[in-house]
Image 1: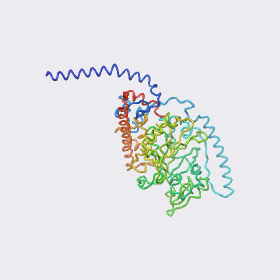
Image 2: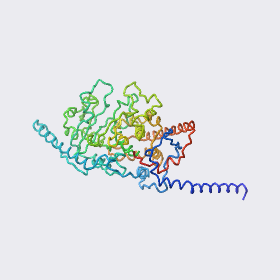
Image 3: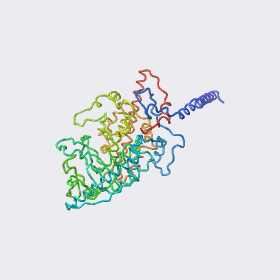
Image 4: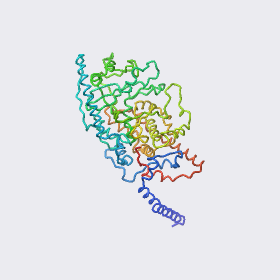
Length: 537
């Protein structure tokens, strides 16, 4: 054997022996200790990464952040379903902590008593209404309403906890989606926020109080309640370039797609939404008890039944929605529990946009705006700021610029999750990525590790965000929900989110070198046990 070959083999054997010794005597014992004492890593908050030197955390390379499960951890789906493989991944099968009464939004006895009282009030109201209609010779369609304690919508309400609106394996959610597609409508009315605008709507304003939209509250035969948003725009239409975000049309398919995206990202902060064809005559006009709503129905020149908002949002029949001739597609969003039993508060978004044609907010001109926000309550502790960043990533993927407020359940206090409501202004422009939506991420350079590893997972070819979304949206009866350009835009935007994170890494690297702070080892930051600690919050 030549001498040079013998020397190379000896050198390779030496390196192999050194690596094996390090692996066996150093790395494996550390991993075992981390696995046995995993809870200690959660003391600073659940699965959070602070990129620009917050709390002394290090700056690992992006390639080391992806959680790679052990061999056999990924189950093989015989149908070739990427969505099935995604939901079978360990990151989507993390054990939820046992919930105590204080971590559940509602208790069974509390909810049942609340709705029994509402049922009694409804029956008294209907009796008086039917008597008045008979005296006035008005024909009213009467539907039987029953209260089922085992209804899927009640189970959905009971499943809301401090981590999310529903658990990953909650059977009530798919059942509720199926039920909403066929439940009989017994009452239709304006929503409470639309009623609040009545009498104060100024139709001379350029910017209306809540945009060009008409939404209705529909009550079902089993006392469930859902918000109906009718179709206003075809799937292949893009929002014109000259239209401001605050006067953009709201899209029913955006509400549906947002629910599916929220579920794919494992946020679970959007109430269940499904598409449905509604008969505007039989399921709205003939069952409404609101005379203002009855008064806005008319027949178009094409003999289609139409209705519009009566000086609530817009005042002209040009903004009417029409059936074909009676059927109208729209989104149905499950209502959350009533405010009297599950109070929520609405809080201005720190990154709220200017709702004028010329104004600009401070965050748009001050690159250090986040430094101020971090000092303010409730963003100076807990997860509120991280939840805002989650919301900004979600909105960037959908293209929604209209997040002026957010809501939380008061019961869960400052550590509660943020509700991702009102997503109808998303998916308007597939050809444009509005980077300013990511301002909370790019200015604060903070992100939950649980959020980041899922984003990286969805960037991998074997899962790919557009593919799992395409598959998930096929479950909706109004499919296709999104056109192909919108689906492909999700992949492009996801890559841009990851690039923003990379820029934060480079920035922190410079900051650490300037401060001469030695970095913490990467393995201690994103061990699989650490990165999945309470990931839902």
